[in-house]
Length: 470
Ligand SMILES: [Zn+2]
Image (cartoon, rainbow, N blue to C red; front, side):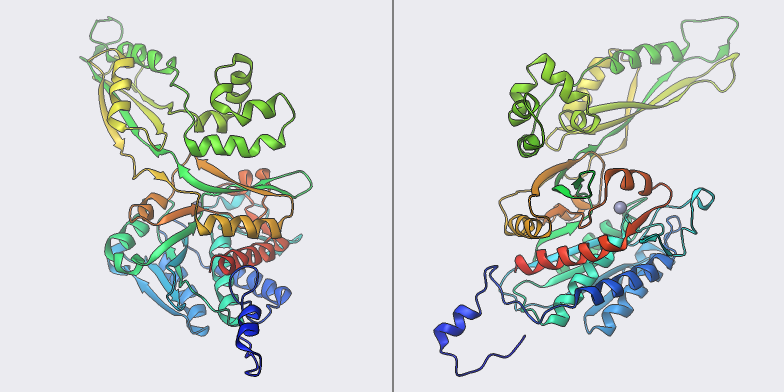
């Protein structure tokens, strides 16, 4: 922080030291230089192979720790014994004055495998080409991990006074078993005790065709996985002589009833707000419909239009997707049992026991046995009336004038409920301007990449959020 002359009268000094956003500014940041450094470090991070399985997150954690050590930020590699060979979580903390509670920036170090044959570049090489940095993890989510890191480093270097500690966490195994976050939360609750806010993946921004952000979607809620296996047992015999003990037709009849069942429509308060917020992007009559989603769902024309969007449909109800199916593996054998797997996703406030009894009632056959393959995590719903949400709104307006911030519900699952369980307000936030086609293709797909311009944007946006929430 720049020293102020002691001859300035105290009252004036207080005015000078109280800028608009509620904290001192620190020394100016050289953004172009920071963007170049960010590009270099993300390239290096992408070259650390943390493909899960096996994960090998220990190498990623060591890479991050070396940078943090160099910058004088205390960092620890944790849980390497509990997570198994080659695996680890990373934890670091940039100290503030402790007058407010801490904010945590969390990413996962592991990435999903890449099928190199389908890529235009080597997915592990972290190459720069056509204005993009390419590689597995560029978007999901080493890019965010580096944006978090660089924003924290920029704050440290600029000498910005902090009222909140900034906690930096890299977790193992988000892409497979979530063991990294679970072990971290179970073993180190004391490291999280003073954390009020947490930012990680699970946000979703909407970008228009010219590359401008229409809205920044803060992920405040997510649906809960409630996977079910249905089993019918019968008596095996020869397919040439049909019996009434064939489990396959019995299961199929139950599945048919489930497949034609329409789950009730219901907008949670966060989802109502989402539709109200985005209404401005549509002409009438759609604008009016979205402004009052609950009423619109009672209007057949509006309802048909709304539910034709697969995302909107999924945030307005519990969903049931029939996915796995097994019977006999030989055409001439009536099998001893038949099974079906249902990918059931619950709204955050849906009671799972109630949903199970609904499923059993719809199946309508006591011969169908239900077993839970994956039980729901803690419900994830977060308040919006917070200093962090307001800081995101202010930083968004500066980053992209004319944009707005809204509340997204994620239909998939993240590590967020693991942290939310401790009472931490946990938001999904993507600091980049990535068009939907780009993330659709790259995340878990081929040719994952992030534009260099976007990298610079993301670091500055994160920095502004962290500065504003102080
Ligand atoms: Zn991810």
